[in-house]
Image 1 (cartoon, rainbow, N blue to C red):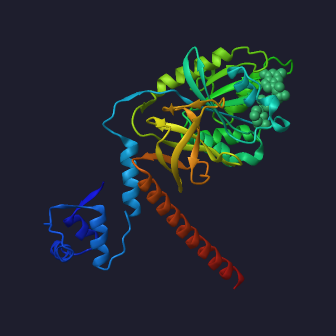
Image 2 (image 1 turned 120 degrees about the horizontal axis):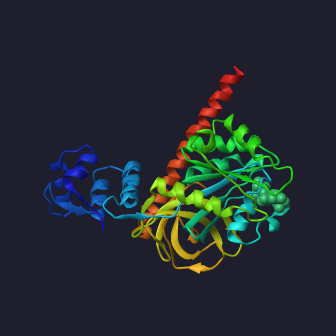
Image 3 (image 1 turned 90 degrees about the vertical axis):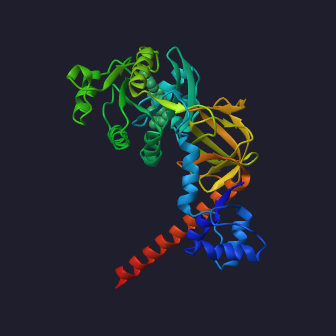
Length: 370
Ligand code: GTP
Ligand code: MG
C-alpha cells in the first residue's frame, strides 16, 4: 500500500517532525523523521494529534489520477481518429454513418431524429475510424458541444439542397471553440435541386474556406443515399488524421471520457465511454466522475461482449456504482478502495460547490428583491 515519510506528514499538519515522532513513539511506533510509515499508521497518528484524516486532498487525488493518465514514459503508438458527425437536422448525418457501417439506424430511430450521441468504430480500407453521431435538432446543443470536445475531426454535413442552416453555423462554432479541424461533407448531391456551390459560398461567409477557394478546409461532395464519393470522405479523414499525428499509450491503465450514460432496468448503470489512453479491461477498478466500480462486462456497439478496449475505441461499461454524467472522465486505478475514496471525495466536493453556488443564487435573489 501507500506510505508517507514522517517529515511529509508533519508538513501536512504544519507540525515539526519531532512532534510527530513523539506521538508515534507514544503509540509504540519507532520512526525517524526521514522514515516512511504506512497509510493506517499515518491515519492513526494524525487523529492522535487532533487532525482530521482526509485520505488525500483534492489536488493530491487529481495528481494521483494524472500520474495514471499521463504515463509519460510509456511509448505512444498511432491511434485511430475520433470523428464527430455534426450538422443541421435532417441533413443526413445518421444516413452517412449508416452507409459507412452498412446498417440501418436512421430508419429505426424515433421519427428519424437522433436523440443521443451514437458511438461506433468501423474498419475501413484506410484503417479504423471511430465515429460519434450527434443530433442536429436545436435542443441538443450541449451534446454537440461535448461531441466537438471529444473529437479529433468534425465532419460537418450540409445538405446540398438546403444549404447552411442555424445548426450548421452552431457546429462550425463548436468545432472552432474546441480547436478541431473541419471536413465539410456536402450531402444529397443525388437530388436534382442540389447546389454544392451555394453551400461553399454560404460557408465562406462563416470563414470556412474550401481549398479550391484558397482555404484549408477539405470539402467532399457525396450522397449518403447512393454511396457516391463516400470513399472520398474516408480519404479526406485519413489525410487529416495523418496530418494530426494522433498518438496514444496503448497499454496499461486506461482513461477516457463518458459519451453517454443511462440506468438500465436489468443491467444497472450503463456508461458508453471513449477510451483515450491505455487498455480498459474486464475486472478493472475505475473512478468515473463521482461514481466508481469494477468493470463487470464490456460491450462493443454491436452488443457483443469484448474483453478490452484500447485508445479511440468506444465501449459500454457495466459495473458502476451509479450513473455518471456524460462528459465525466474515467480513470482505472489500482484497487477498489482507491476508486471508492476518490469517487466519494469528488462527490463531497461537488455537493460543496453546489451548496456554495446555491447560496450565491439565494443571495442574488435577495439582492434583487431589495
Ligand atoms: P438528425 O439526427 O435528426 O439531426 O438527422 P440526420 O442529419 O441524422 O438525418 P438522417 O440521416 O436521419 O436523414 C434525414 C433524411 O434525409 C432521411 O429521410 C434520409 O433518407 C434523407 N437523406 C440522407 N442522406 C441523403 C442523400 O444523400 N440523398 C437523399 N436523396 N436523401 C438523403
Ligand atoms: Mg441523425
